[in-house]
Image 1 (cartoon, rainbow, N blue to C red):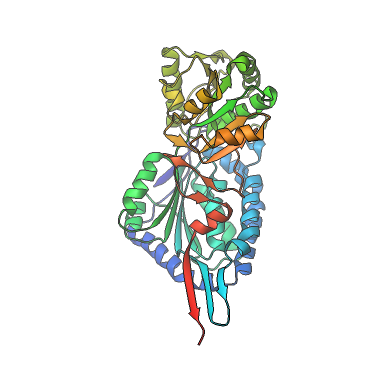
Image 2 (cartoon, rainbow, N blue to C red):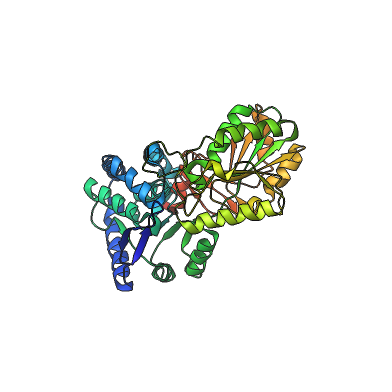
Length: 456
């Protein structure tokens, strides 16, 4: 049985039996059989059906929001993920015709030469729990629009999300086998990948999980998209708007209890602004209200699992033992136990501490002063990860110039913790490989097929 243990009270909120090997293989066979007819449908029909599924999910918004609170702890006051979910579906639907159009090379009285984008076949999406709807739809929507069939394996912590998506696609009128939600254990998932069941696999999760995916796919030549860990930095420069920087960066560090793929985990501030910036951050974070996510007044819910909270506690305690200073007093947040983890701002930190190197994925952020752009760049690049970096300045040219030197997937100026569906969502180093959304997302979910037609 695959179980979801609710972070609210530690109860078993949902449990489902994992498919056997034969059942999993049958799901793949159904998807494979359905794919040819699905790809043959006009693009406009596929787009319309994906949009209809989006609307069906929106129709049960209240249920989804409550379930998310129970499954992974996000406060109901934030209304789920429908803003980003809808934006991504609509953007990818809107660019599909151009993104998937044939690339014309020659059309003359002698030759017709062009490159066509064709689907991989069956796409496996292995989705994470932290933004379970948005991260899944990043691949599901463009994969289906491009003519692939999709099998979704969702995280155990958000096991009901796959069912809600499957219901929405079924109610929208998707043919049987085109979209399937499955419950699999790790061994069965690896065995399916190793047996070349899929044309493409997209995985969002830990570095260890990404390595397991690569190992399972070794020798199969299966395409992989991997979004793994992150340790995203912010840099506040001498000409930054300090109020905007503090407000946005602390939201990026604490929202969703710090459990954001591109959340801010470390901040570097030019020396002359350090004290003022830190005080602004302290004022903002101290106003957080930690509590039951079903309470509309709660701004900071529990972490999704107690082991995630314990890792953040361990990193924080190690840093303090090594000389860091925690600015927020524990007595301000009496519910700091189990999955309920108080927010923390650390100063007197350095890169010898795990809290500034390892992924924390919780409501803790370290803030360091720097003397120059060069020092900030060196520290931002002193990481095994590279997903996003947030630069705070009034000078776009300076941000672009510094951005060219930062090892990351996305450069933000004066914002953070956001996924723009028009831009490629990608990373470098241990953050993974590939890219989702944008035109490039369609390119990764299809393969090029060349046509050289000689007229006689």
